Length: 146
Image 1 (cartoon, one colour):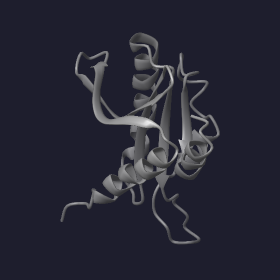
Image 2 (tube, rainbow, N blue to C red; image 1 turned 180 degrees about the vertical axis):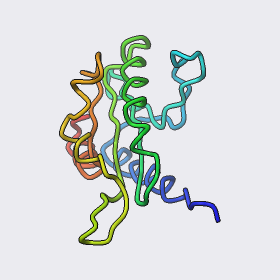
Image 3 (spheres, one colour; image 1 turned 135 degrees about the vertical axis):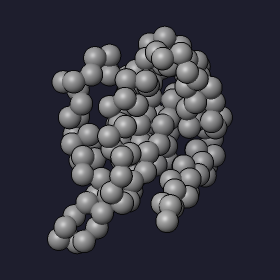
Image 4 (cartoon, rainbow, N blue to C red; image 1 turned 180 degrees about the horizontal axis):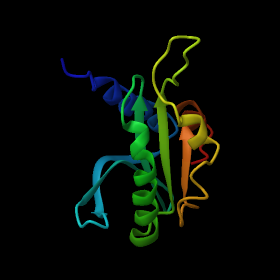
C-alpha cells in the first residue's frame, strides 16, 4: 500500500488564503534557477512585497518518513537561491506533528531541533533562511511581517 501524500498538498494550499487576506502577491511552483547539480529548482511559493522577493518552501510530516532528513539540503538550496538569484529571504515552513510516544503520535523527530536553530553551526550562508513552524508562519503573514 502506498503512503498518502495528499496531506502535504493540503498543507501547501493552507497558506494561500492567509497570503491573500494580507494582500501579498505570490506565485506557486516557480522555477527559480538551477541547483548546484544543474537541475531546476522549483520553489513552492515566491511572495512579493514591495520590491522584495521572498521564497517559501513547505515541508509536512505526520508519520515516520524522510521529510526531516531532507531539511539540511533544502536549507542549502534556499541559501544558494538567495545568494545567487537575488531573493531577499527564504522561509522553510515545517508543518505536521512531532513524534511523541506518550501521546502515540508519529511525525517529526527533529523538528524542534531545526526550529531552535540546530543547523546554524552546520550550514554556511544560512542567515537569509528562516526555519519556522506553520502556525508561526501564518502569524507572520497575518501581521504582514514576512
